[in-house]
Amino acid sequence: MDNQTPQNFVPPRHWLAPEELNPAYWADSRNLEKRGQEFHDKPVESIALIDKIDTQGLARREFLGIMGASMAMAGFACARKPVHKIIPYVVKPDEVTPGVANYYASSDPETGMGLLVKVREGRPVKLEGNPDHPVNRGRLSARQQSAVLDLYDPERLQEPASRSRTLGTQAKLGWKEVDTQVAAKLRSAGQGKVRILSGAVHSDSTRRLTQEFLAAFGAGAQSVEFEPLSLDEILEGQEASYGTAVTPVYRFDAAEVVVSIGADFLGTWPESVGHAQQWAQLRKLESKKAASEKMSKLFVFEGVMSLTGANADVRTPVRPGDELKVAMALAHELIIRQGRSRFAADSAVRAALESYKPEAVAKEFGCTAACFTQAAEALWSAKGKGLVVAGGTQSKSENAVAVQAVVNLLNSALENEGSTVDGTAAPVQRPSTGFGGMAKLIADLNAGLVDVLIIHRANPMYALPASAGFAQAVKKAGLVIQVTDRENETSAVADMLLPDHHALENWGDARIRKGVYSLQQPTLAPIFASRSFQDSLLAWIGAAQLKASGLAARVAAAPAENTWHDYVVANWKETVFPLAGAGGSFQTFWETSLRDGLFVQKSVVGAKPQARSFRSAS
Image 1 (cartoon, rainbow, N blue to C red):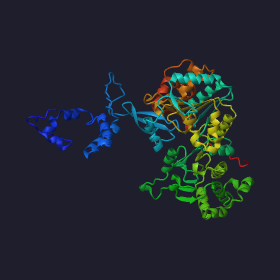
Image 2: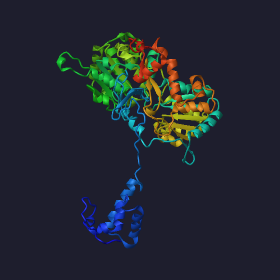
Image 3: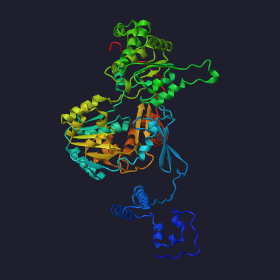
Image 4: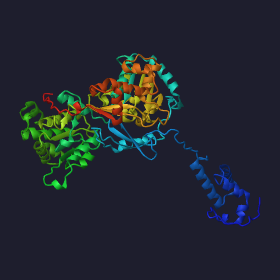
């Protein structure tokens, strides 16, 4: 140790302790060594001091030093910070200017809404609605906007893994191992003993690929779409009333009077962003025309406060589950008591409504019959420009379909059908996404009819009640594969966990409205070792040498780097491009649709709605 005082010593401007102001501090070689370290006290030295506590005690200064070292070790994991080198472009892409964002049109696979993705230097940073998309018209919900955070979430699955059912342990797998093991199981699967369970599918390409994949296993192989909060009662009610199981397009922008019976169309309904944008158009008054301006009126009957109820002009609380009584009392007031519409002479309608007198129903809710009279008169005064809606997560009951039938009767009686209710522009009829399909799948599992179950974007272990018996039934499947972006409750019963692409890393398409075809495109390369569900199906067709039909067989036979991309392009060439009319090449059509994010068939979207005939006998 050198105790000589340095000549011409100048106290440091910045110091950690008063000792550093003493020239003797800098004369000690040990202090100089500590000053040159990344941490003032090495982890080994800190551990030695901790061990010293039990034998010799600890001074206050030493205690503070140990605590500081402990915080440093906890915060930095006793390791140096990683060095990130910035490598400039050798050849800079023409479309990239540092600091200037690029925007790409895409779509949300879960809702089918149009997206506008803001990208900076190859990284998506913000999601907004596509203003050219006729459904959400540039609007986007908070949940959809926050989807970009999932892209960078470190909790995402980063690589494939196998899982032991008995031990619950996981082991990492490579994609080649995954394909080899899955192919062996698929080849040994019995006739029709393969099932695919997913959330609601809005993609025509995905649905076509799924059906072509399942065709290789015979007629018994099926796909099940399940959404725990689906509005299947609307489809069933439409089929019972008009013969077509569709979700109508509701024109809130043309409705001067709206009556909601347990329908949160501004909050939890599908396409609620578009509904809110439409409804708001008739809720704004221009100050220059205030005397002549009309503002729409909203009546809400609901059992639980909702966003729609909070915006109501007249809100009437009712007991949850009594929505059918409300609808019947409103129809009784309008059709029987006031004698409105052609249904006033329909004996079948009068017989069904006779026992639902408004006074008796209102007494149950603690209100007066005036709540029904006021709503009925307002609806009739806006005949053809009114709208009655019902259904939703807060009003599901055993009478949900019957409520829809009465609502359809009211809209037909008020001549709203074909005006504010457009059943002809509704989405293409889709399979049920309710509990019926899940009940059949559970029955097939219990009967030993499922050798391979593939689960994609669904979490039945969380969504289903324990009494449904899915947890026990799924154990009887030979192989359970979960394709997901993160572990969830269903992962506990899966044999394989396969990381799925984020929507901003994947190709796809969507169609939630007739004549509106949306495209989904990736805005960056996959961050982790993930693979899309669709690419996995194509890979398994090739690995297992399945006799798949149609387009899937052709694409799988000649796999490219992005096989799912090839499939989407080929499907659009076969099904969508012919709708564009004569003239122009497919390449031009594809690039234009990709730039705009969608293709709109104007002859269908611009068609005048047609009123359907209500079947009162049903």
